[in-house]
Image (cartoon, rainbow, N blue to C red; front, side, top):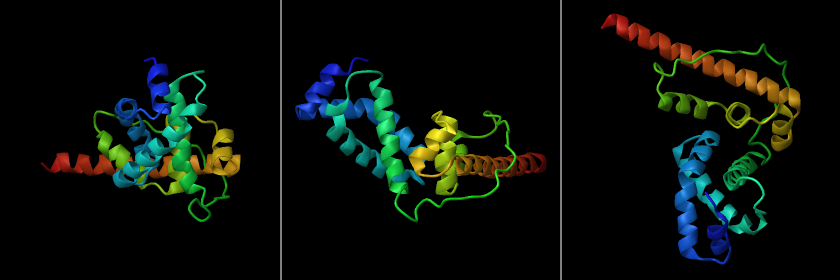
Length: 182
């Protein structure tokens, strides 16, 4: 999609263009907000805050690269900014656990359940997990974004994977027991 005309109208405070841009971007950006938020309500707040920021920063978009990518980074950074407040994101300096790798049978585990267990992760784990797994940030980039060291990023990712693995296994085992007892 060519955003140039709609962006220029938005910069000129054209309310119709702003509404149009919101309708185009909101579903994509809400999924981004859901990934980085603790719950649905917080994601809605982050979406609203993200659009306020987006409209105020539109003049800085230089039409180089993808507008969707630029907007996504802006929304991610906006949500992460809330976790940079002292005390919100704990810094963990622990040994890096063995990397946990597991496969999920997407036909047997509902997407809603996966989103729920990711949102239940402690902030420090959820943020690193989402940045690394879903948005392809490197540990170096994550460390810079969150103000942590690379080892902490790796440790938090490993711990997040371990927690998710345990929850998925518990879910699968409870469904297996339920099926056997029917």
